Length: 144
Image (cartoon, rainbow, N blue to C red):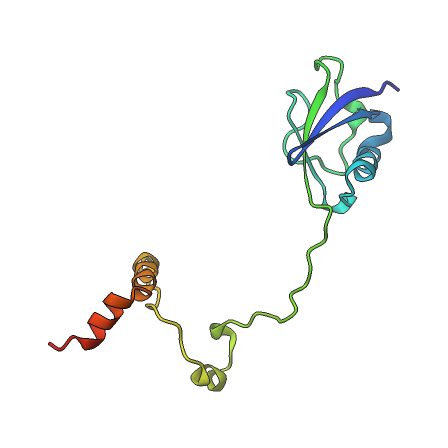
C-alpha cells in the first residue's frame, strides 16, 4: 500500500511521518508513540485536513477505507496526550464536606459565604477584601 506524507501537530511540535493506511490505527499510534513517547492508550488523534474522519480517531476506524488521494499532501492531524504519567499526591486531599460530622465540628471553617447558587461571586469578592488589613481592622473596630 502507499505511504502518505503526514504532519502531526502535538503541542508546539510538528512531527513528520509516513502513514501507511494498511497498518491501521494501531500502526499509526505505534509510530507516534515511538516519535513522541506518548503511550497509545493516552493518545487522542483528530484530523486537521478535510475529508478524513470526524472527531477523535477510534481504534476501530479502517484507515485503508479513507480516500486519501484527494487530500493535498501533507495530511494534517492533531494529537493530544502527555508523555509523562500523572503522579499521585503525597497526601490525599480531604474536603470539609466529606468529613464525618464530629470531625467537621473540630475544623475551623474558611472565610466566606455558603454558596446559594450565584453567591460564589460575592464570596470571592469577600475573600479578596478580607486580606486588606485597613479594611479588616476598620470592620473590627466598628461599633454601630
